[in-house]
Image (spheres, rainbow, N blue to C red):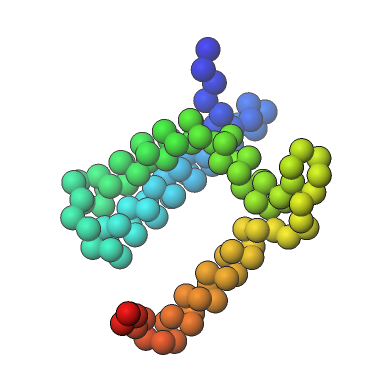
Length: 114
């Protein structure tokens, strides 16, 4: 039997909250592609929201544990029980990319001329 890990059965509202999170995340992805990137998508905004929701459910059902393991390792890198570092790699990469993004915007998003 395949269990769909949507919510704990002890909380009746968690299933509705999970559905709301899926819908809002799918709508945010559709908004980004349809309105911000201005991509011509089948079904316009609502069609792309539906497709994003199906994609989110597929990845959630198949890769959730693997993605969680990778993120947990990035937050606290270790091999076995040996801690490699006390640095949260997610935080330092996020900080580095945000700083470079701001620097790029200050530089008026210029392209390199190699």
